[in-house]
Amino acid sequence: MCGRYADFRTLQDLADAFVITPENIDAEARGLPASWNSAPTQRVRMVAERADDQGEIRRLLATARWGLVPSWAKDPAVGSRMINARSETAATKPSFASALARRRCLLPADAYYEWQRTPGSAARTPRVPFAIRRAGGEVFAFAGLYEVWGPEDLVTVTILTAAASGELAAVHDRRPLVLPPSAWDRWLDPAGGAQEVADLLAMPAPPCEIYEVGSQVNSPRENSAGLLDPA
Image 1 (cartoon, one colour):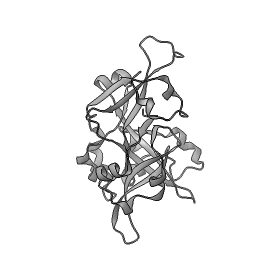
Image 2 (spheres, rainbow, N blue to C red; image 1 turned 90 degrees about the vertical axis):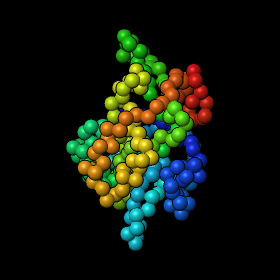
Image 3 (cartoon, rainbow, N blue to C red; image 1 turned 30 degrees about the horizontal axis):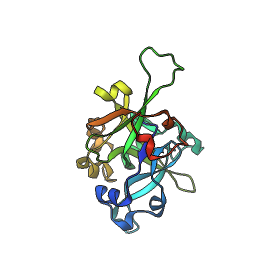
Image 4 (cartoon, one colour; image 1 turned 60 degrees about the vertical axis):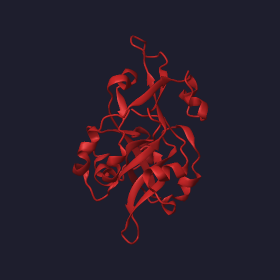
């Protein structure tokens, strides 16, 4: 799974990476501070494409609350249990199928964290935190889904995950689904349905740098650049 990540790249860097014009960066995204420890239920930045009042499709940098709330949910608290969606089954799950067909997004990240349980350790033994970053320092683009809920138009988001392999699997059996720039246009296109992006759900992980970090990251109240320092 992906339950914590860092997103501290500047607005200009994100606008350049995702080809977003200044007028398509919303006010909340401009005001959201850098984060080295984004946690579920917090506001996070997302890239999405939507039609404006004239029907023109625009690529936006906006924000959403992490933890998807289906449009039919009676209580938004359900979102705390939907921070991730399995890429293998999202198309058939009532909570995610509609969003996969119509409301796909990307979540920029500079790193993410996973917690490793050492082999043979007891269930209550503290897990060891690791940071995972792109080997070349590029931004991660997590494949995400979003929904709009309730009379207040609450925008919420989930991160798609896939099975981990190789060195990533040694830390955790799941990983965020990361899409390369060549897939972004097709993934974000609201005119394409779930079938048009089905092959992207099997995209392999990019080369990553994986290293142990300190236990301070265990607390979502901790949020500073030092969290990414090697232990």
